[in-house]
Image (tube, rainbow, N blue to C red; front, side, top):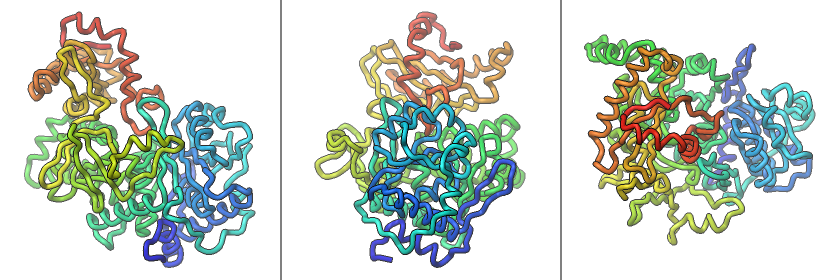
Amino acid sequence: MSETPLILDHVFGHEARQGGRIYLTQPVAGGPLIDYTWAQVLDQSRRMAAHLQAQGIPRGARVAILSKNCAHFIMAELAIWLGGYTTVAIFPTETAETVRYVLEHSEASLLFVGKLDAWPQQQPGVPAGLPCIALPLAPAAAATVLATWDALVAATPPLPGRPARAADELAMIIYTSGSTGLPKGVMIDFGAHTRAAEGIARDTRERVGADTESRMLSYLPLAHSFERSWVAAASLVDGGTRIYFAESIDTFLQDLQRARPTLFISVPRLWLKFQQGVFAKMPPAKLERLLRVPLLGRVVARKVLAGLGLDAVLQAGSGSAPIPPELIAWYRRLGLQLFEGYAMTEDSSYSHSSRHGFAEPGWVGVPLPGVQVRLSEGGEILIKSPGQFCGYYKDAALTAASFTADGFFHTGDLGERRADGMLRITGRAKELFKTAKGKYVAPAPIENLLNAHPMVELSLVSGVGQPAAFALVVLAEQLRPQQADPAVRQRVQAEMAQLLARVNAQLPEHEKLRLLVVAREPWSIENGLLTPTMKLRRARIEAAIAPQVPAWYAAGTTVHWQ
């Protein structure tokens, strides 16, 4: 291994030293689990890399993957890297229009089609003539008409040796899910990807112990930087982490209980849904009473975590969006070490993390080793990370505008820093809006206060040009089917009025909410109101409700039903 190893050097080391160790565990619908050792993973990846080279695809060309998380997603990426190419992963929930845009914009030379729920709707987005290969869990509609991974691997001898990639070669282009406009192609080279992966692997090992058997469940989209860096890349460097995959939404709890992860990362919306699932079985007040009882409280907390499949977790993390501080505190009361982090695609998700001693809810922690941070005069967070991207694909002007003269990235997020290095996110510059009072409102902190309520799954604060801000809330999943029940509606109405008063008591005068509206339908990836990483598509939601807003203000009441 060279003095400054890259990610493939780590992988070759695992192949040589622990080829028989299980690395990936894949559930198959209606069938047994399939375990893949390091040797098996590399054998398949080397064979596919040799096949790609035999097609005459030039070095550095882009090869795309459209698939949900599965063992062969990681094998396909390794094959792409071994062959000398650059990965372009597409979110498995994207529309045909976005699939086509990414494939054409990246000039992809080939597409791996994997585990998908909506392939018939996405297939029209694949340009005619683009070579495609079906991964083992691809839909039957794809596997019966495309060349298959298994057949090609069986027919191709493995690529030998240790194919080298340079630090400045592109490892991947990550197309951001984009809450507005078309996705941008974030270019990550092997040097940045490796340094981020090494930093994450070191950080997690320090938290859980050098010799602890590490298990993770991979279920957040591998097309996204968060899962790609903190699960896939970190495990490729660490070598001692076993990755389990989730079969489906319906089997998620079973998959989680099978894996019994020691490391578990999620996004705020799912942490909220886990909590609401607990509350659906035991009212919050009753659980709180039980947790306060000595000895019994510990037993109850352990049982709750075991029911979620999280009782073996030594370290839990939340990222991708702000999480209500009250939610972090609730999990910690159960004994789960839940820490918040902060990063973005442009720094390979390697920026800030909470840790023991720097774990105050509401703050996202301190810089990870090697990360530099400062605030601009306007309060914008500026970051220089070892995982820094090298630019936006085919957009030199945007790349130039995204950096300061001395190489710090403009995050677009607003924040405050303490003397001890702790960082708090106070809002996103582009999300700030002015009411008729002429003062800016930052929606994210207010949404966090609303989201902490057990009846609320998601919220959006808006009110551009209105006399005061307002909030739109999506009710918790277990409440939504009961909205037509007059008794339930009355209870929700009363709770929302109290929530509005409680939140307003914590806000300055210019940020106080005039009214709160209960959304008729949930926001989802499927209806286009959430991004594939579950961020709000604010502009779309605001456009959808715009015709109703004047009537809400004119009514003069504080709680409305859409």
